[in-house]
Image (cartoon, rainbow, N blue to C red; front, side):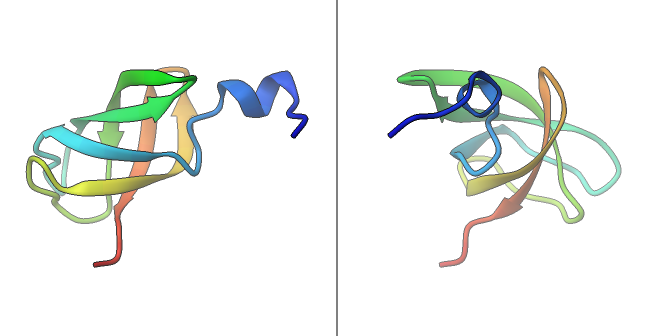
Length: 73
């Protein structure tokens, strides 16, 4: 499979786990599986998400900030 440099760097679509709870009015932190390893990102969500909940990255705000949603059960 061939990917462009941009898609190889983007965490969008990657699965992660919340490491710092995400409040509804501020950022938390997620550990996301990217590039064969795991990287920490500042994470925002429309709803609060507790620690250790699995999430999917739905948008990238900046190089180190993402928007996430809970993974469906």
